[in-house]
Length: 445
Image 1 (cartoon, rainbow, N blue to C red):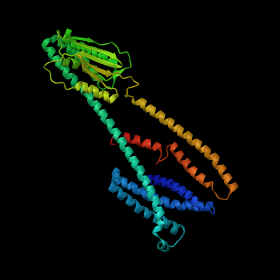
Image 2 (image 1 turned 90 degrees about the vertical axis):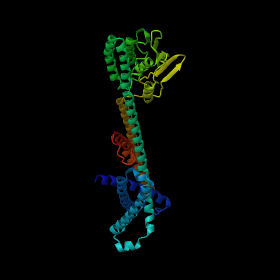
Image 3 (image 1 turned 30 degrees about the horizontal axis):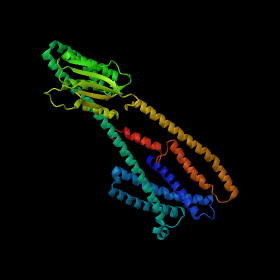
Image 4 (image 1 turned 120 degrees about the horizontal axis):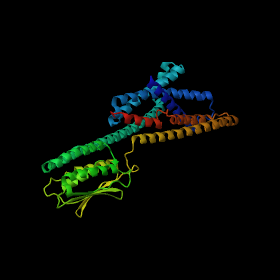
């Protein structure tokens, strides 16, 4: 019943629009040169509405059947040809029914007489109008179909990026733990007491890893503090063979970087370079032109497995998801350096969901208020101008020309009001936004 009432309302709207268009065509072509009375206008209107409602309802239910059976595959060439053929047949049948109701039911002609006088030429114009309206509906649903596909693609991209980001963050656990256990294994052989202290400190460091790995961004100050703790942990093994310089705080307390990036770079430096008393490794962390630079002297180990690049690739990929600014790597003059972009809250793309929703709600509310204001302005103008036109019409001629602006402007005003208050089921922008939101919220879409 709900579908029937909805489609019936649409049929009345579409029928009225068609009537107004044809009324203008008939007026320009001179069909009403002998005058247009209210009774004649009403006769033209209800005859038009009989055809419009029956033809529209028949095609509407055919559309519903098509989309329930074929879904979005209805836009394949063969199925579309079948559907259009069905629209032609159902429209011809609907036109016949409408003519029978009009001439047999209302004008009381005998059914035999009605059948004997029927000609195919009587169906041309009505069929043409029906096919044009059907084509508009096919185009409308095709645009809707493409729009839903775009929403679906964006949702898949968002989910893929989220899954990819989670996978990158989850690489940190085995990567960090594997390298830390290697250090611990070496330390057990060299100094069991230091290994015991290393194990205690490692548990504290690993707690930080577990806390921070699920964050998208952390403050530079947090990372610097953790880096100092981590390097001190390394110095328990290497002692004077490792020299480091890490600032206490960042120049911008709001600056952000991806979590555990410093730890990955520092452990890579130790892993791939010789660290001995005769060849100490110098690590330096500093700021330069909005970048956090991690630098170390190069003294590569002679016997070492070829680097897989997991650490650097992990950092690079996480930055690529979060921002357009790229991590920079330099290897020249016996110095290896990595420059990490420091992201401020203004340039970071990691906007909180609450702020985004609040901003969208404000913009939508502002847009709706503007639309309602525009509608009220249109309504006031209509109420002021139309009575004047009717007064002028009655004072000048018997031809009811004021009917055209009254109906035409009134129809436009109705559409304006329905769109402003979000009631337009066919063309309204609010309907489009609600449909997009509905599709985005579906887990199976």
